[in-house]
Image 1: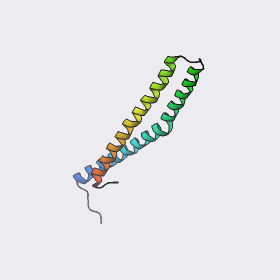
Image 2: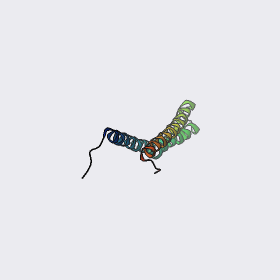
Image 3: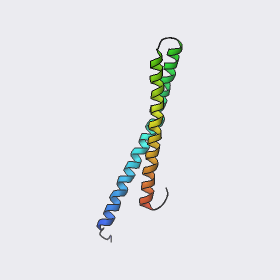
Image 4: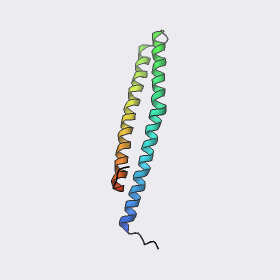
Length: 98
């Protein structure tokens, strides 16, 4: 027979669910940036570089493409930090490392 849960257990379970969901969201964000947005921005830069070298694009367009790559890399680093923070929160609530 299952005993009734007290307010503390309910609160901990809610916190765990919230932390686990946040970890899942952070992992999705990292995957999106790493597997899609960063490669796209790098291809855009390579294309802009080729266009600049052949005289079809101006220098500002090349700089914009390079800025996009750097900005996407920064967003990936931020997402990785967020993912680590969320993982730490889940581990804290579990009381063990995953």
